Amino acid sequence: MPAFRVWAPRARRVDVVAAGERRPMTGAPGGWWEAPGAEPGVRYGFSLGGAELRPDPRSSSQPDGVLGLSEVVDHDAYRWNDSGWSGRPLAGSVIYELHVGTFTREGTFEAAIEKLPHLVDLGVTSVEIMPVAEFGGDRGWGYDGAALYAPHHAYGGPDGLKRLVDACHQAGLAVLLDVVYNHLGPVGNFLAEFGPYFTERYRTPWGAAMNFDGRGSDEVRRFVVDNALMWVRDYHLDGLRLDAVHAILDQSPVHVLEQLAAEVHAARPAALLIAESDANDPRLVRPSDAGGYGLDGVWSDDWHHSVHALVTGERLGYYADFGSVEQLAKALRQAWVYDGVYSQNRGRTRGRSAAGVPSQRFVIATQNHDQVGNRAAGDRLAAGLEGAAALLLTSQFTLLLFQGQEWAASAPFLYFTDFSDRQLATAVREGRRREFEAFGWNPDEVPDPNDPQTFERSKLDWDEIDEPAHRAMLDRYRALLALRRRLPAFTAPVGEDVDVSIDGSGGIRFRREGVSVVVDGRDWSAEVREDHG
Image (cartoon, rainbow, N blue to C red; front, side):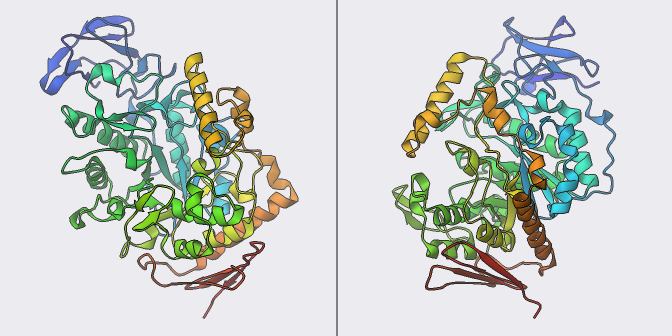
């Protein structure tokens, strides 16, 4: 029975209250406090200096939500059925991003298991789950988590997530989890009471930055690295998608991302670590002995923006930097358009050359939760679907699909929350409306994130698959993914062994070994030919 342990370096007294019994904890080296443990299922909390009970910062389970007591969990009690599973390499991966709460009508880990045959039949190799760390309320995107070690109670808690991962592995699917280490959410965020988890030296767009390089930062770094190790070890996850790493601010000689990559890969060499970043910095995916951080992959927003701006004609916000067919051709060759090029929208040079980086390290998409959800109406790409799919699904890069995209789902993916604090709910609603007004959208048409109907509208309608138009799109995705599986393994560095050309009408011709694609620049229809010679 493991002991209760908590890091509270500034506290003079810490008590643990377990099953209603209060016990003083004993100070240990490094600012830690310890006390005898309790049986699995026992609810407990910590009191600093006699103050109100708080959940364990490393709580494995929050059955009553992020503001309730923690629950003791024995991770070894779960009996796994994936002993023969060894993971999947990034090369050749087709990643399917899903949000547990809206992927099915029930919105649980258990219900998601029922849809795995669909993903296998589609040709998906990996599932990427949007953040599940405990956040405020029952519904939300998950990027405002506050209990980073606890899978969300409304989705099914620790055992529910384990059953989903187990089922994925038995179906031949790898599982990646989206994690957020750049900030914590506003509800249930008690870390600052325990220690110097945050810093005033930096700010993120979403709140206080984590303290990765100031006084007391060694244990903060351990908090994050241990969290990554826990997901891989206790939940058998095959990798992590690291949210907005450009907002993980650290001037240490060894960046926390490099430390995390080294320790996760040492624990499980096959584990994949994929960064979301808008910096276009190849150091993220270069090996540590070459001055990099040693991550396995990085998202390319440039690829998405090049397609989206050309197809839709949108030029507001960051789309102001995109829209030419020449930029799309560059993205098709090398993923990043801004590789040391001046950005008019940002008013500065952006990015750096990724020459020599293997193509599979770039993750591309025509839709994802950000590019759909961060629109006023949460609307999906509706134009140019045939050409966009052809370019995406034959690409030499790693693919990411967003839930429902494969059948042109009609459900939007809106931004939704479940804040009981009215002031917070109002601030979020008004903040979103101001943001969208700056993009040229009518703020009065932006749905209220805290309205339960905003969440309900975002749930996929699986019955659509049987409708002719949706079925036709699904059949196209299946056929193109089947073709992709027949293509020779692509191992060349970015920008090499592909041919891209533009015709006089703005059409695109893309060719790599085994396949050629011609997209008509007028209507975005596409012709895909398998090259057997």
